Amino acid sequence: NYQFGHADSSVLLFPVNAGVVVNHSGDRPNAKLRWSATDERTREVLRGSVEELNEREHVSLVLDLVATEDIAAGQEIFFDYGRAWEDAWNDHVDSWEPPPATGGAGMPMSSRVISDMNDDKFNEAYWEWSDD
Image (cartoon, rainbow, N blue to C red):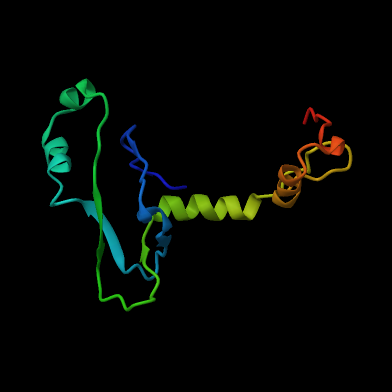
């Protein structure tokens, strides 16, 4: 869910900052992403050729999250993920069903059970292995 790509490219960008917590709104975005105009490494990469990029061990790019209107303190920031993302998300929500419980004999798996297991590592009830 938190990656950026383009239908005509095999490149995927994985943000590693607070940008991953900006929610989608196709109706009321108040921000947008753009290539950084101030990060020299990003500008260098964007000026380079595909061949030059292929020779690099890794590439680091910076995207700026830019307000498209005044945003008040405490107001949520939204940007438009795009129609394809919204359609895929709606399809997922419409067809999603919770997976069956796992964890062995009558023990549904949940974060609470995992927490209990971590608190009580030597309890033999948690030693059963499940093949599902």
